[in-house]
Length: 258
Ligand SMILES: NC(=O)c1ccc[n+]([C@@H]2O[C@H](COP(=O)([O-])OP(=O)(O)OC[C@H]3O[C@@H](n4cnc5c(N)ncnc54)[C@H](O)[C@@H]3O)[C@@H](O)[C@H]2O)c1
Image 1 (spheres, rainbow, N blue to C red):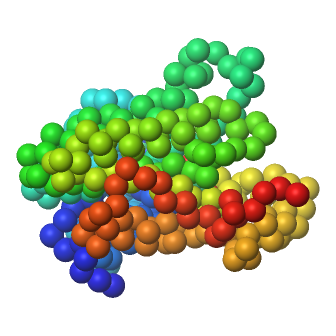
Image 2: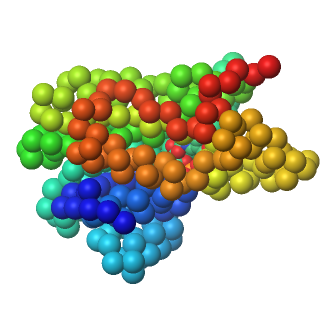
């Protein structure tokens, strides 16, 4: 497809399916060697196998981003296999909804460990490797919920807002080492959680049509849309982009509810 990432390697969390898989496929298609850092062994292995069968360099590493030891081991396995680390994509996450008056501290800690702390821990273990090579890119997959939200999205939106802060701090504190950090905020993207959301509606087809119609572009995002943006941001073509958020939502956030 292209060679803009030739000679680079990428560590993508939650890349067994959905947006993460779309990102891994696009990065590989542009020449990057990819580690599928995934908690689900079945989907992680199968994504890595599919990439290898397509002629790309890929490996699976079983990583639960809630566990620092597994992140550290996953990053070490990546460096051992590919000889460095150029790109980290913090993608693993899950939409979780709680009543702010009833959520327990344990539930809060678990939610934040998945949707915010894991991204910081991946930065923590990748930054020394990137710094030693004098370059790197960290891309945090946030959400349109990072800057605005809707009813009953607590505390997913809190964690996603935190990812914007993480993005800015990494950009500021590591920019002088040629390490960039960018947040990518998707809107509705057709992955398993969204498919299940539609299926829960009384009339799934009508609900999907309603959501599609909210978009100026009259379609829902696909994992490859997000992957194409990440492949661009990870490349030298985006070498002056850091510390900011790129929204990719088919224009839905340009419109207020009326
Ligand atoms: N789909 C959307 O509409 C949408 C919109 C905005 C943002 N996002 C964000 O995009 C990211 C990917 O979402 P998706 O829709 O592809 O979801 P998904 O559920 O299809 O994929 C998530 C992947 O992360 C993996 N994962 C879950 N917990 C993990 C852990 N502890 N350690 C490692 N891997 C883990 C899962 O096994 C799965 O492969 C998430 O951060 C989500 O918040 C999605």
